[in-house]
Length: 459
Image (cartoon, rainbow, N blue to C red; front, side, top):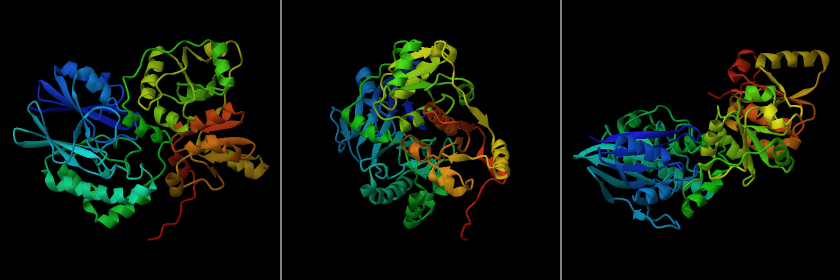
């Protein structure tokens, strides 16, 4: 019996897979912190002999090479990928025997030119296909991460790759993608937690629409992706080593203040409610309760030292683990406890939180009394196009650090779709001396209150 075990990385929206026959195991697309993989293999009582990469990843630093070296496994990467380390090169049509499992290599370009999928068979039965960034649940991987010169070629290749998988594999074949669980590597938001080739034939636009319709729809739906992606391909081609997850040095209040004054990032990991109520002046807020590493990696000037502030050492360790996944290998320092501990007797900073109902009241008061303020919408372009608050200033969250000067003077009410990104931006503006109000509310409530302008759609 073949068992496939997913290992979730929700902060990045990805999955790693461990597949085994009861004694021998293979791994597909391991994250940098591969100790989770070895722990799972040990618990299952199996030995890892092969590590497969579907592609040179753009959204995280792989743990594949280090895992293979530690376990003595073969490391299988497309032979056409230009990498600076030794690996077992594989190409379309190759078959790899892993214990009782038989893995066929299928070239599925689209997310990258050299992307591979791996079809797993045992006892003459096609069991599963590991599709990486090719065929996702209800979607496909995005084709634009290698730059605009490649996008048109890759999007059409992606459609053909999806059809090849659908043609060559039985409907009962389980589909196991790496991306699509919130990852920005997905062209659109994927649906569901499991699927088969047959289900994808019925529901996936790549398989239900003709090529031109698929291309048009997919390209129209692409939006911005995290800036740190630019660093992932080179890191993965260079062969990343084992991560260092040992605790960083502890900083006292004087050191924290020096780091802030030097322009380094001192990041408070508490949730946005606690941060707004009181925090170390000049610190930033990327709460562990949201997409911490996506937005930290997206906004930070690459290479800026990061100090972590957590209520516990466990919080710091969790954040550090997420950071190594995108190549921020070591925090500069850490501190635990609460803001009073970190401030060393200095006054804490704070700002208001509000709802869209509070914003409506403020807007009504503004009309009556002329109280001036600005509403800052930090959602992405596609979200803004669906509905927005008339008169609001729009700067997507990832563009705010470079466009702070465009935000009009006065109090700034910041909103997003649910509150997390608004909290990130409110903290950033507060650290720069702006008077902010963080709207911690669902944008659906803004619609219900009649605050939104919705574009007229042509039938």
